[in-house]
Length: 132
Image (cartoon, rainbow, N blue to C red; front, side, top):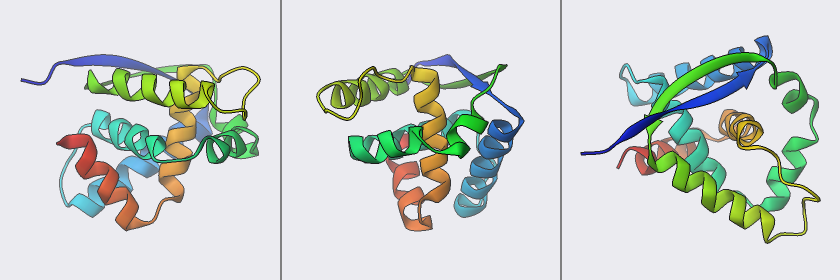
């Protein structure tokens, strides 16, 4: 049995739209009603596949700044998400791309932005890896 936990997202109105857009797109592609946590898991799984330079570049965008916010939202997802985020943070800390690492909450926003830009095939691959 897979354990779950709750993850905190700090989003602006634009960040909420971003999350819901990713969620709707993923649900359409898998042709099923899916929990919000599956969308977050797919986004983090996709983020794992990116190079630190791609993640660093996304942190510099206006979309990133505008998507981060103060509205607190909780999403239940697999406890594996914590392990994935630890791997991502380790990969980023071993790179020369960051003076200081973004918070986990900010990395969730980068994950969503990256997932939004992914091709359908990449999105489905991340989904399948996230739910296995």
